[in-house]
Image (cartoon, rainbow, N blue to C red; front, side, top):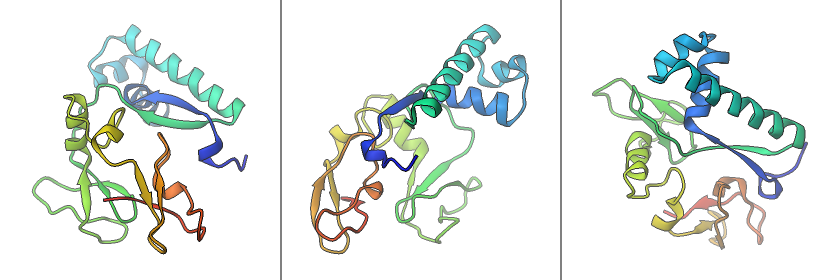
Length: 170
């Protein structure tokens, strides 16, 4: 409790594990219905579901951060992430993506970023994103630059000079 993410070890959860938990526990689907939704067999679904339950138990008991990453994912909608306030949202097909929280038009298409990652082009999402981008977080107030830390968003780090939250260098 109260341990900054930067100092906490994390438990890594794959996207398909997250989806299994969402379908079974949030959407209240049976394992059979959830497996059908994910286009996998019921025994495979149950194995994935049991894995995430153990990982979440470990995270809660040991006070670890939960990091959702990697895996094989296909989206049924176009998802976007606001680069200003970091809100994740989707918009109907053909509509202009504008952040639903702050109204910013500075957004990134998560679907395209994930597709680049899955095809080895190393977009921002998932393992390898730091190989494609500079590993720098910047203070918007005093312009201090700090090396990014794997698995920790820049916005969760504070500037060593002025104490403000950092942003990712763009």
